[in-house]
Length: 367
Image (cartoon, rainbow, N blue to C red; front, side, top):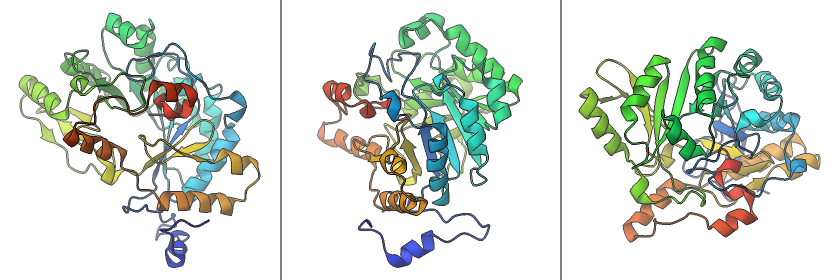
């Protein structure tokens, strides 16, 4: 069934290819292209980070619903036909999924994919980094929120700091050309480590990206007073390093990049105080095949059911095309607008609803 924004003429153009023989991306109601895809391969995680999944236990996705690697590769091929060229593997913790390099090899066979990346907490990375690189993984991002082992233990509920550092060290040794470190900056918790994290990243020839604490999900007990804003980060860093310059050419990337006086670069993802919805080209597929058009979305589209019922490639592509072309999501901007009327404080989703539907928390959709 065609969405209200679909037209025959527009549909013809979406089936065409560009001058370089690549697909012409589908665009949504705001003109945003479908270019980046985040694939969650599992909803399970081996940490219990306070800002992501602080509960001791959750309602997990049924095992029989989790997509096989072949199903993931097939769905991805349909997305590529519609313009996607960048894929990021997420979780939960993606390295908990057995034999993940096999999926990477399957995805690497698709010439329309220009980049396959992985976001991991790093706990299992050291033992898998070489095989991941050999399978065709292009880039690794490791979540690292603190350099203090005791603070790490309080944040994650686990004593795994040393293994994360081993994982970071393994990235360069395996052959990866670069490394990104993602840090959720929480006011009153790790906001005294900004400089230390930049220096740590410099040592490993990595780039750190500071992420404003986001009010997604509901179990993380987010509040605005815990948000360390982009302006606060820049002010603190400039006091230590001197003048900081913005690097132009952000494009659709979530991070605004900056350069220190000595040339060292870092990034800030200001999702809470300065949303970038207007440039967002990302969507997410959960491990059981639910397609979410926005990180803040309450509802998604079930792609697993038609796929397993034997829907044709043409039908699947049409479903995806119609879904994206009807996309109006701008979740971070909407949450930002609530500040004006004093309604932003509090959970996006109530804790009881999270316990009823595992898709509603961020660990299930690759936050």
